[in-house]
Length: 85
Image 1 (cartoon, one colour):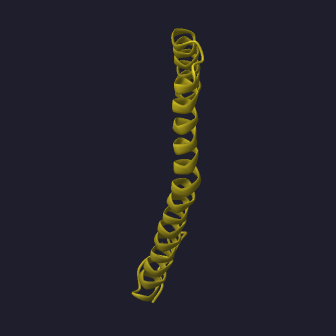
Image 2: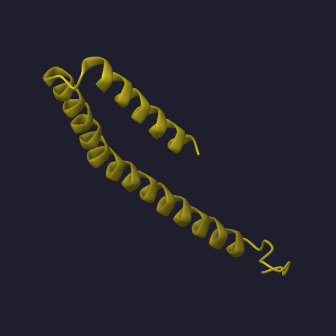
């Protein structure tokens, strides 16, 4: 919901500034540069962030599997409450 409100606010600001500056060339250049920078940031930063999240998820999954197997090997309770010797 917050994203939609933010997008709507940006559109309203864009519309108000366009009317104030009367779609001047400077205003068009400023808007073009701003949208280009935001697009570049999204294209280059989001995939990198996703790779970090995936790596962290894989590492935590592997750690959980190792912990589970080491618990079973030490004679602790297995899932279901059974004791393994």
